[in-house]
Image (cartoon, rainbow, N blue to C red; front, side):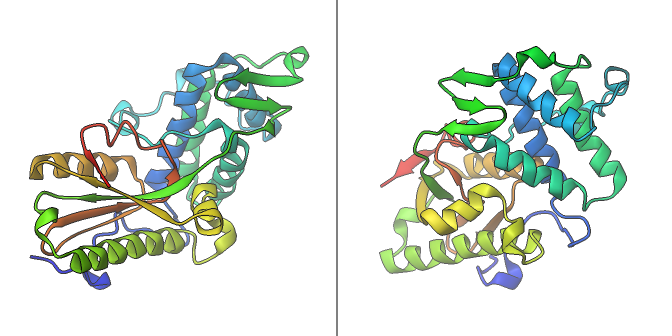
Length: 261
């Protein structure tokens, strides 16, 4: 079986500084789309951001994205409290990818927002919901956010010696973080807000156990399809470390797994 040394760790799809996180950027746009479905006010806020950057496509309704490339089983959720920072990060990143990939992300946004421009009179408090409070597109009051990194262990993890398990989890965690830094072209200012906050505000790791090899494989397949940065390995047990996130962002993905204390 494959060891956990970094040259042999699976760290997801290949990227280069010129084309960073192409699949992941689309997944982030889809995450914003999910928020827009839940809140008309959030949809209006998102639409305003697109208008301000002249990214509204007048023919968006007639130019759908290839359904097979958009229809993914799971995308990481986006917390409204960091939506402003996350969106700015995404707009900066799509400027670095080839035009076809950039247009694909823009079309995802436009399909989420529709083709009707928001009325100027609607601005002031953009949305006030349990999801958060925004004023003119900027956070006014945000709940306390906790950040963590998820590491998923395959069946048989409890047969490992504690020190060996700790060592493997640490290696997988570091490999996933290395992937995030590589995707940012080794520029810390290009890290996603959640990753940056995890490094600065907290470095907790949460462990989850898969009851079967199929459960582990299913989660890995969803992660691959979403484009989320990750590191996976097989040494004595299967292991999958994901990009750091706000707690709760991966709840749907992890619903069938066991939380390990």
